[in-house]
Image 1 (cartoon, rainbow, N blue to C red):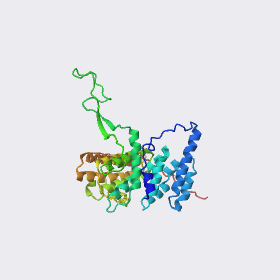
Image 2 (cartoon, helix red, strand yellow; image 1 turned 90 degrees about the vertical axis):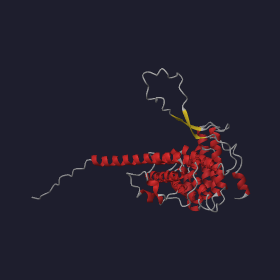
Image 3 (cartoon, rainbow, N blue to C red; image 1 turned 180 degrees about the vertical axis):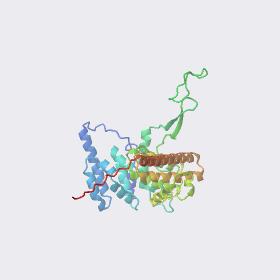
Image 4 (tube, rainbow, N blue to C red; image 1 turned 180 degrees about the horizontal axis):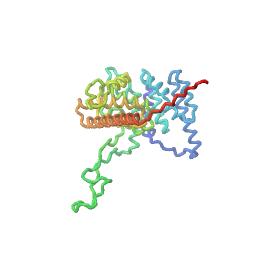
Length: 371
């Protein structure tokens, strides 16, 4: 990457990576705001078309001419495949530059487009980082830093926590008739579980902060996962399985009633060619498991995404069992058990539906006899 592009990638994010808010001078006219958004999206699509092979230009031009070009780009599998193929090549920096500028445009729909490539970006970055001769990763790191800066500003120095119910007190669905005399009037404060600590601004991807920065990018993807296309989720499942190491036979230790002999080869055949087994610290593993939980149990996910998530979770369970990571073992084991129960219930429902479906009675044959 030349010096000018490097300076452009690593410019200060303090003013550009802001939360999506209207500018003070922006018109309040909805039609004008819509047109400005459409014009910005069309401009970004045309800039993308200039970076891709000519075979993809015509399809991108049709997306730019739609009434909602950013969402059309987000829902186009052909456009995703074209960008994906180029990112996996040797000239990924221009596309990283396009994704970087597109994310900093602060248009919410364009940001969704960028987030849809986070699984691929994180997968390629981590896999190439641990390859024997890693190529230049400045473009990937600049984009990861932009995602990290935006999330840091949106959290405003606060951690992400979850309330853990206290089993010593009755639940909200259980109100005893009489409170014990020894019970104090003031209830104890609820326990809080830490999902993510407060984020500190980072100007570079240091080795000690790399897992946190990548994990924040995965969290950003998870926060918008309901808007993400199926092929983006599938990419992540394939990477996660390869990161864990997909060849351990103990991945099926919890499958006592389900047979994955047919499922595993089919899903493993789709494993990403550039992925490989890598270190998996908790900063990366935790958001990965949250993404896989959605891919595994989301009712609107297609079967291939659910199957790939099933494989990835089992591979991560085997990896956690060998690495002796208690929280990872507990999380993956819970997801596997939920997956088994869901598949068994679906199988039983299908069998019950077939058994209760009445067979159509054949109409009696009418023989015509000529007199």
